[in-house]
Length: 199
Ligand SMILES: [Cu+2]
Image (cartoon, rainbow, N blue to C red; front, side, top):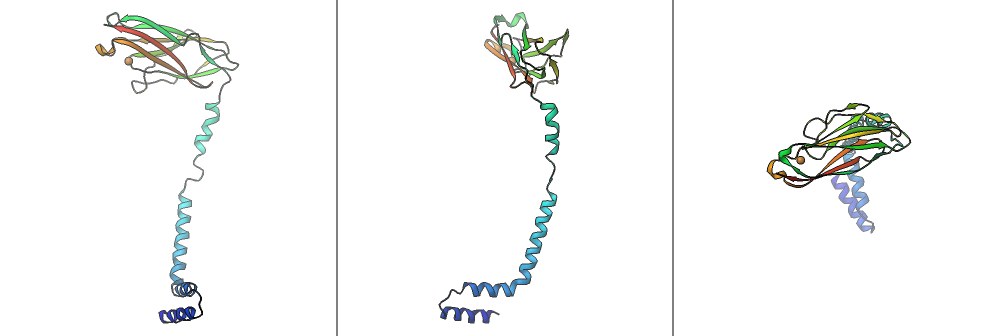
């Protein structure tokens, strides 16, 4: 075969044509069985890869989405988004403030969760004479799922408790903490408390 190829090469050189087509022809005729086997193996591998792929796997995520994530046309508003405790003393202990929130939109709003920006601050929802367990900072204790629905025009209170002594002497000075209220009417509602902490 090699001899034939070299003769063919010479011939093609003489005729002034490129020798490449002849070269590939000889390669193909010699290695055809091996190439065919290789192609079959490649196809089989491709088939295995396609079969192993989780073809319809994304279904669970899209299945749970519509009911739980339905967006409300309600609006969660706070009467005041910020409260200043002023100068407070670590020695005097915890301080409490109740924010009033209200659904000012045209559909009920589901309050999913509340959490705070620091472990020294907790927040509870007071609605219909009931008060939820205080929620703190993510990663510092359990953040309970509230799933409390606020009707159109319904009001509720968010009780925020700040412990100025929680950080020890390093907690002295101007302080601000955020309470985040997750709901299904859009972005989270944020309430802020500020204080000037003194020993
Ligand atoms: Cu803190």
